[in-house]
Amino acid sequence: MKESRQIVRMWRQGGAAAMVTLVRVEGSSYRRPGARLLLGKQGEYAGTISGGCLEAEVMRKAAWLVRDGAVVERYSTMFDDTAEVPFGLGCGGIVDLLIEPVDTPECRAALAALEVALAGDEVTVLTWLPCAGRSLERAVLAATGDFTFASAGLTEPELMEARAAVLLRGAVANMLSGVFVERITTPQRLFVLGAGDDAKPVVSMAALLGWSVSVMDGRAQMARADRFPEAERVIVASAASSELLAIRPDDAVVLMTHSYEQDRDLLAAVLPLHPRYLGLLGARHRSSLLVSEAAAILGWTVGACCDRIYAPVGLDLGGDGPEAIALAVIAEVQASCMGKLGASRRLSPEDVEIHLREGGVARYLQTQCALDVA
Image 1 (cartoon, rainbow, N blue to C red):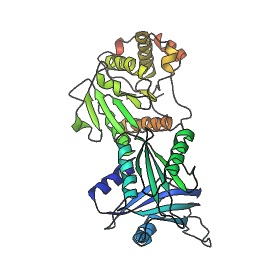
Image 2 (tube, rainbow, N blue to C red; image 1 turned 90 degrees about the vertical axis):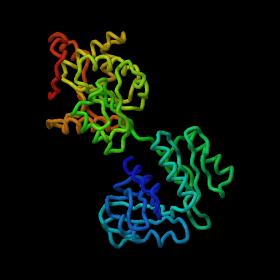
Image 3 (cartoon, rainbow, N blue to C red; image 1 turned 60 degrees about the vertical axis):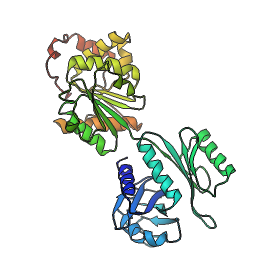
Image 4 (cartoon, rainbow, N blue to C red; image 1 turned 120 degrees about the horizontal axis):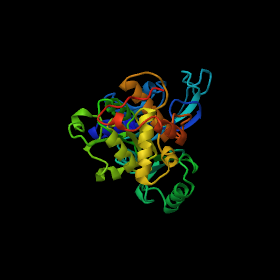
């Protein structure tokens, strides 16, 4: 997503000459289909299509390759320098690259689709790859199922077949012969509830990944845009604020106000919104008390709350300090949202019961919480 933002920014500034898209991989590759590289007329560029094996070669030849229009070029990154299309830097695969001039309606449509996705609307781009007797053609399908762009040469039957393939099968790669199909998703949204100093590296790391980050806190002196320049939004908001209702089921939320009262009320407010990820910062005992009180407020079982919360928040990576904790948190959010999460430290109803016997909430009122290091 960060690369997409850089590509769109460079395009809007003018001076772009060609766009390169990875459309097929055979074997191993550093990047997956859909990776892009935008090339400028003065040698500037944005994005990547490999781990550094191909960029210089493609930049050197792109202007010449697209002199007559878009082309698909094949490159090998295997060790075998006797291969037919060797580029032997050892990545171990063969890739097909679509190289197209920027000053065409089709390329502008693809770049505009990237911009639309960054703004929050998922789109599907279908590209009929150039081959013998046929030039590149493209269509852009909005999430509503309507085409927002279609090349003049595409026929109605071709468009209807493409739409049916996308909407009915849900596939996203080469499901039609000679067509590269790419679903361009929106950035992962992260809500950081808490604007303390330890939230700053969490926001910075999420922004580095190209996520859309919102920071919320009920304390106006902390929830300030100048404290979180990488965040898209910094809002003074409490558990009762309507801004909290913007949280959707595909969002990630990290609760880290260090205020017991704020955390309790926010936890009770966010749980019914069912975000994809909800992490709670703090010691196991403190988190157990918060879960118990939130369950009572909502009329839920403790087990139902535990099933929806990651506490202690973050993967157990080791280390200390705000940056190490932020890394653990962002790693867990990334793994969870990408469906790659293995073992994670989480509370169980039995844990909560044990910690409740250790005492009440008095120690956490008007104090800073201790971070869990177990």
